[in-house]
Amino acid sequence: MPSVPTPSKAGIIETTSGERHIPSSVRPDGTKRKEIKIRPGYKPPEDVEVYKNRTADAWKTRGSGGVPGADGLKDDKDEGSASSNKNAKRREARKKAKAAEESGEGKAKDSASGSGKEPATVEEVDPEAEKEKKARNLKKKLKQAKELKEKKEGGGALLPEQFAKVIKINELIRELDALGFDQEGEPKVKNEESKA
Picture: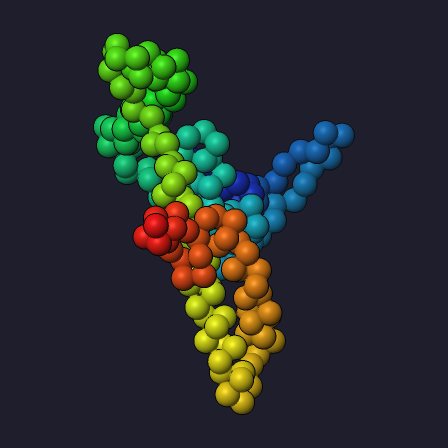
């Protein structure tokens, strides 16, 4: 018994002699269609395989958990879970630290009286050290402004920004004075003590 050839998607059947044709069929109204011969080499659009870009397919299926090009890595879930565990541990540690900091504000008063441990809180800024830092900064600006003033008096040309610094000399001296320092950046209290 000869094997019956299976038709392609377009319905084309290839005979043993290599001829291709679409077999005759009957229409719904009862009339008969003729057999259609297909020329050699012709491939109808229905039979042409559609090109599939694996990257594009992976991109389309990423919503279902797929990562483009990571089909072979699905077995290595241990590595991904380890990194997510690390992040989870970090988040949890931050939450605990924040909770300890919030509750530590109340404990800080207790530790000042001598009971309990000191909580890990942000160091308080020493106002005296902050004053000295600001004074050093102002002293530096004042020195630059005085050098620019000497340059101007010596006949040098100044840029507009440099000229603005020269104008601010008196303002810098007033700020130093308000902080309790003289023009040299030394505390006024020490100078008064040394005079006495």
